[in-house]
Length: 193
Image (cartoon, rainbow, N blue to C red; front, top):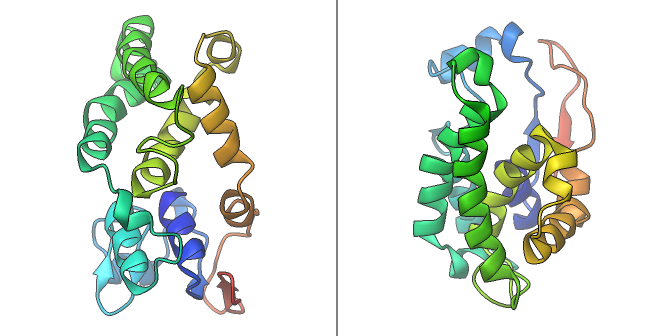
């Protein structure tokens, strides 16, 4: 999601291929043996969402997202929070204590809420790379137990999350696409598609 949002906001046009992970196309495996999504083949192959974001915004950053990176917040999200999120969502796979992992994640979400009580975005009055990098993981956390999430006293976080869910970039990139197969017509995405 976050890579697609950065591509969309950059105004770039890209050829989109919807991949089902249990049925990965050979062409994807040829360019990225890592075999994970997203993968972007541009001037080089980039197979990390954050790096795709930086690449796209490095081409064009009309909203100034790179000016508000928040590297420490992103690192915490992609590190300790993501670990807790996975162990919360997939407790049977990991053999983890779901409630304990939820509390680890919730502790960090309380910190984000405190930032967002007085500002619309994590680093002030404008959205940045930080917000877009973290938003999809907060969304996953919320959706793991929406009834529980919705009764938490997180007014800033709740407003921020809903704002991203309603954003034109998110709405545009979340349109369902059919699984790509070799020989399918090219599907162009982006503002100029």
